[in-house]
Image (cartoon, rainbow, N blue to C red; front, top):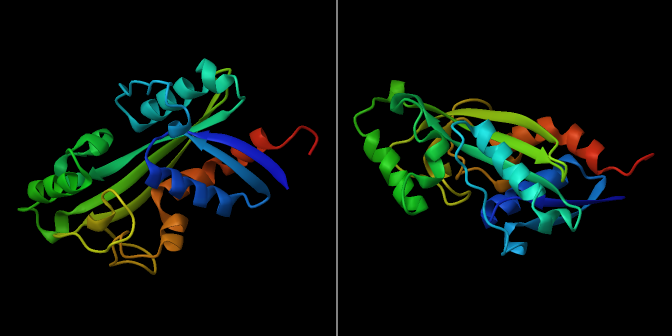
Amino acid sequence: MNAARLLIATGNRHKVDEIAAILRDLLPAFTWELRSAADFPHVPEPVEDGDTFEANAAIKARGWAMHPDVRAVGLATLADDSGLVVDALAGRPGILSARYGATPTARIERVLREMRDVGDSHRSARFECVVALADGGGALWTARGTVAGRITHAPRGTAGFGYDPIFELTDGPHAGLTLAEVPESVKNGLSHRARALRALAPTLAAMLRPAGV
């Protein structure tokens, strides 16, 4: 098997674990040696001042990949920027999804509070994710994934993280369930992050595979 060394540019343990599980499913020919932001405590987080998911994913991927401490160990970097886009809220929380409240519970409560007068037929939403892959020279590749759904009136389910308990799927065999109500293995096959990583997988495999293999 091919060994694959990669930095996942986030300190969010839930996100690291989810990305790791998806990568192992998508590219089983590799044995993965994955690092995260927690392994580089002296590297400052890049300032995410972009106004799109694409811009912020690129900022994170390049910022980490080109830092001397990361370049010194020869790690390509994978970053993502993702969020909840609610039609009735003019796209909010969007790129502010991770900062829409002080805690995950507070963020969910804020969305539900802002949606309290919105009827069932107008609660459409989507999760969007852009993944960015960068090397130490600054080369960059990106891919996008989206999953459609609707905002529930109250949280449901105990799995997942973030906004999963209020995001109900509207298509496919799991329609009517929130992302917090489906098994992890199911979520890892249909989520916005899984779809973005699936689109990026051929590029990632080509970068990580040794020359001539």
